[in-house]
Image (cartoon, rainbow, N blue to C red; front, side):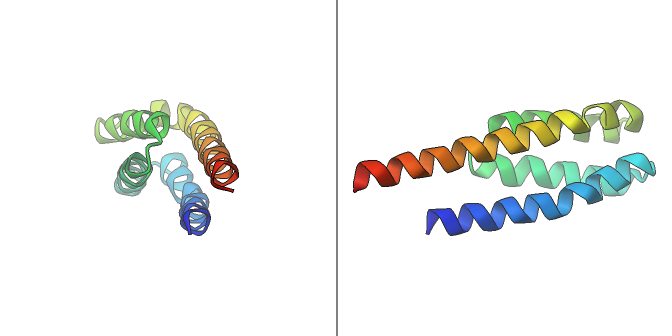
Amino acid sequence: MEEELLSALRQNVVDRLPLLKMGLQNRIKDQAVLYSHDFKGSCATIGLEGVRKTAMEIERLCIENQLEAAMQMYSQLESDIKQGFELLEEYIKNKKRKAA
């Protein structure tokens, strides 16, 4: 069950990342704030602290109309998301091995 939930959340995040990027690239502040805030909350819920911190900084920059600076952090957010989900997947695999 954990794997299915993690997979669904990961797919949801991957599907929405381009919407944040589009908001940043096209300087659509409301869209950029919405998705950065969304990533901050959803990833914090499952313990991805690095993602939360990066998304929070992107959100702050967007609110302050610093969308170019926020765009410069986008690749860090992608990296944090990739690394965070890899760590969670490894944790679940190890947990299953120990339970077997």
